[in-house]
Image (cartoon, rainbow over all chains, first blue to last red; front, side, top):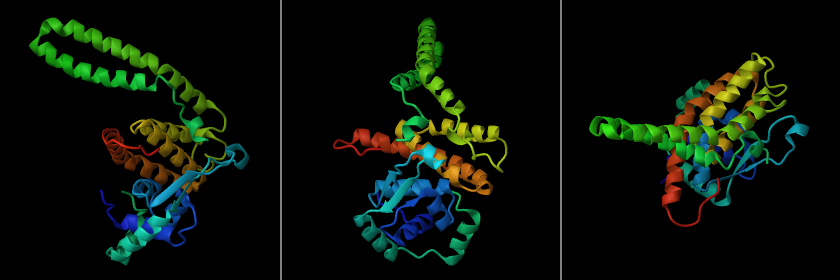
Length: 108
Length: 165
């Protein structure tokens, strides 16, 4: 099934595309896109299922770091190319829609 | 991997799930049988009782392990530093328990990952945003559960190599 490029999906993909080599974790992505984490998570899962995104658990000792391990996401090589092409072809989200999302936290 | 410590998986988990599902099917079948063949009602009742007992007994190790995890110092949202400025520690534990219960709507591996991700994020999010973050996780959970079960079903039906996670 083809991935539907909703405004929220575009926001997540754009955030990841800013630096395709950089790994981002859930909170970082949520802050960068203005989406609530509960909204961003299913999107990341779908992107991962499509092969656009790869993820991994951070390899740390939670007791030493005093926080749980993060799940890091990054675009795959093929995913970055496909995402750029898809975004170029997609209708750009209107600035009002983006503003509303950022204000409302993009709750699904 | 830290995820394994959050929601223990026991070998009896499948027995518990199958017995639970079987119990609901037996309840449905028995309500039909009572109206059509009353002589079968005792067999149906016995079947339901047996499945309920099997499900309850198979779930004991999981429940005990879950309780130990919640009570363990530094585990889940009850850990130090998770409740500062965001209500009592009890509130944080309740939130984590709610997330843990909701994660059981999903297939086991997907539920563990969702809970792990939620726990990781909620540990770092500012207290002011924590409530909204929990709500957003809870609101998106049913749809996510449907999506994950559908994916699991398709993966089982479709021949060929399976993707992990």
